[in-house]
Length: 380
Length: 168
Image (cartoon, rainbow over all chains, first blue to last red; front, top):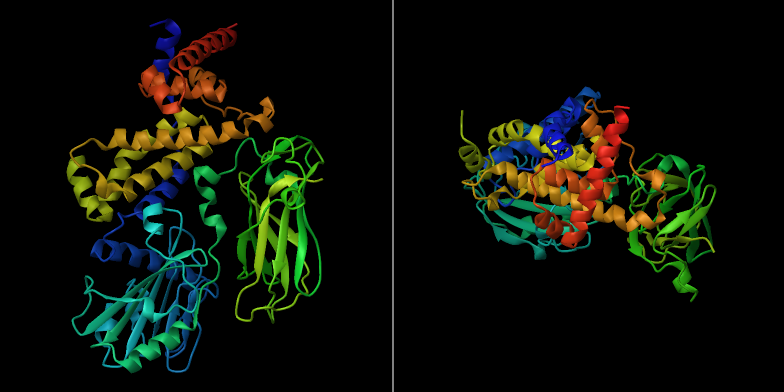
């Protein structure tokens, strides 16, 4: 071994130390990653409960409090949850920051204080009588494990009890209750729904549960959830968000708006973009809107033009531009004014906002707008 | 003090205190491994965290009689190799100046390794700091053995020149 080699080996002892803040962040994430596949073990329950309590503690600290009995209790006004309805008591954590997972609860009885400290409020479940029902929906972000994701089949809202299966008893489940369970992939979430009945599920109880399921609102999962993972973290080779500006250039009327998100490199240094972005829409209050994204071909392919040099990588010199094909249709949104498209380009790390104005026809009422999005490509 | 094996068995049952203790024991080394491979604190944070999360998430499949550290290291190495491949795919569009600039580190040798081109730095770190043999590196990176050997040789030459310049 040469002197240089020996010197390098010895330097192993001089590698830097992790910073406290990063270590604490990692510890929190690791503790939230309790082994999967044993969902009803008390260990996991305790952990989830701790997470829930932490989420609520944050909400209370922000000055929020529980609403009176018989109404909706929310920790935050956004995120998945059940809409208020006469005779139903509901609770939702609202949108949470990973690793905290949102939950939503609804029952046609008064929810007990255990809803604050248990992922499934067993004490309330234990008090259910015949005809009474409690629904518990747990939401987790997709992408953690392909094997786990595969268990959640794509389903549309409203979820149907016909897809649920009688299961249990789960650990902690009181003997008076029976349970049904439904796994679904909805709007980018893995949703695990439990329906608990007092005694055997009667026809009336199932009908009530199905009616309440119709009031379950599931906004799009944040695409930013995975942005901190190495595969999607900012690349040193991709354009920096701070050097990019975006604007939406689309036109059309009644049926659809079609055009492009134009991305301009306002920095002096050349950089590169690639891949298909995730595009969100937010309203004037900054709340994420329910818009369904679907893939589209690049514009050059739609026009039958030759494949651009270097594509799918798009090089942008200083002050150069690239574009992303977009098409919006089925605008059945009422009462909300859209404000901006947020474009998450792979490797850039941050979203790029661009203001929009929309005046379109509603084709299929009850269905969210559809936004077709292509890969980034050169401006022709 | 509980042995790792006992902690792993309890962690497999979902005991948070066991996972916490495993984290306390192994995080520092795993992070330093991630830093050795990436030479960037932010990326090391991401890689080490992701490796630990993946390790804990799939702990049920782990044989508790085996040592945990090499397994976590292997997950981190695979993550870095994936990242390295991804960045290499983007490489044609990149100016050489865009290669990550090394951060301030106290040790001049660690700093010199950080200044190496990424494809050389990865091989140096794997070989000298993580004790991978050159055939193992070739297999890991899908490279011919000769390429690994020549990159290692050129990396040593670069380091020798760099370290000598530091002392001029």
